[in-house]
Amino acid sequence: MNVRALAAKVLNQVVEQGQSLSQALPAAQQDLSAKDKALLQVFCYGVLRTLPRLDFFCRSLMKKPLKGKQRAMHFLILVGFYQLLYTRIPSHAAVGETVNGAKALKKPALKGMVNGVLRSFLREQADLIEKADKQDTLVYCHPGWLVKRLQAAYGSDLAAKIMDENNQQAPMWLRVNVLHHSRDEYQALLNEAELNSFSAQDAENNNALRLEKATDVYKLPGFEQGWVSVQDGAAQLAAHYLDAQPGELILDACSAPGGKTVHTLELQPEIKQMVAVDADQKRLLRVQENLDRLQLSATVIHGDASKPDSWWSGELFDRILCDAPCSATGVIRRHPDIRWLRRDSDIAELVTLQKSILNALWDKLKPGGILLYATCSILPDENDLQIKSFLQNRSDASLIPLSAQYNSQEKGRQLLPNEAGMDGFYYAKLQKSL
Image (cartoon, rainbow, N blue to C red; front, side, top):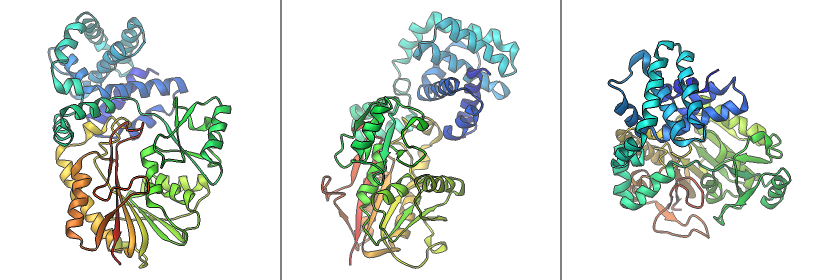
């Protein structure tokens, strides 16, 4: 099985057909060895991170683009470029295996063409790289609309840093289940398993550990017994900021895949009830799987958070986590396909949906209750500006400090990619008047 050909197929599914990498990649990895699974992931993530740059090289070396049924061959060539530029694979092996990929893609007649383009690139790469480095979109490897939005929000220098961080590999974060071990106790278990880890720099993340090197989850001590979960440090802040108390009725809206649901239950097992709602029936299965592995319970409901009357029991909630659908621009380093699947027009649609969900959920919150608004976006329209608009239109809402450590009452907290090693995230904590 030619891994380069598989990578070309996956990339074609993502870029041309609009499938998410998180769906297309696991399907392609099913019958591979652990080594080939990892190699396939490297190729897919790498090409998506550098797509416009590799496309430029391809356009420069070919008289006409490959289209239609030959489109997968275009991505095979990009996989070849990626190996030659960014991996330690010897050039003869990279070229040879990529050329063989043409046969695996049932296009043996195009082997000569693939070989010729890759060898031309080896001869001309210095000149091509110099030309690419003069174009911002080829340096940043982000779509133009996103470059403009980031520069408008953060200025040119910080926007450039954000985009550079988006092109790096994200670390693997762990959330220690305090129902079983303290963070220090579990870190000792990791040391015994020869897995180096670091405590979170953020003082509020007292259950979080960052691995020095990513590993298979089943190599983590007690993973199957629910001792630990994989969750980015920024996402772990949600349960801390929500701060559920004994006897309270809690709603996690837009809850799939359930990491924040179970973390809330780990931190406060004495709540009255946890209700987890999501509009995606398939992703709700992940919520139940997480609950089952951790031996926790919640009321899992398939429902639209913007239309709670269709699933609401009638009892007002003490606290609501509104983990709103968003552009996911804060997690591009984990999901490099996001930048190519999103469109500029999506942002306004998402802002409208977020507003609808916020207003609908607010009506189901008790007087004095808390709503924690969260996104994995770094765009102001979805975050500070969204909350500012909500506060202007809701006289019974006020912004309150997220925690004792983060006590700004003026605005929410915007985390940028790789801030303290974490993903880009936004939080704002709202309280309803009595």
